[in-house]
Image (cartoon, rainbow, N blue to C red; front, side):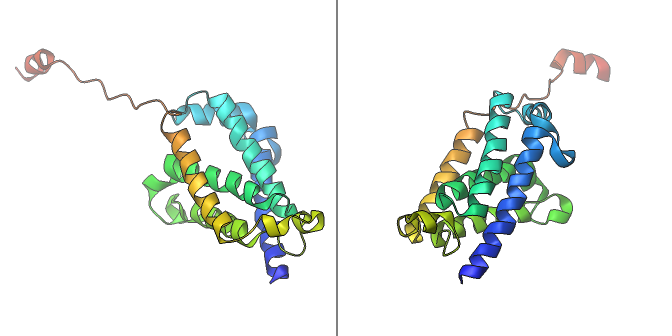
Length: 180
């Protein structure tokens, strides 16, 4: 089992860390911090630059934490939170399947992160090397990470988002004049 968890941690963590580096530094064709902030502003997120920095760091540091098995449930929380926000702001409107821009891959990433919070970093992790892996794993860590990530995502999506502006409606008088 430890080898499987190592493989999952390494691939998931390195992939998410690289995604964060795209957002933060613009590496590998990514937008960089300013580009990410512009994109987040277009999604009506308040304070898009600090939110972009938080998302990029959550992906970069959360991904590295998962890959190394360091503070595994906290790394999982960071990754799951970013994925839940991505589902709500970008992918949910497109349905489930990724082929249409849906949320299937984001859900898979969030679920894998939560599962790693429950299993812990396992045998080949820095958590084990340090000796605190037994205190940082178990069912309740997984449940806690899932719940905390959902609450954190709601905090970003609720007060952290500007309301949509309704389309300007023409006054009834102008509509009546056009109809005549």
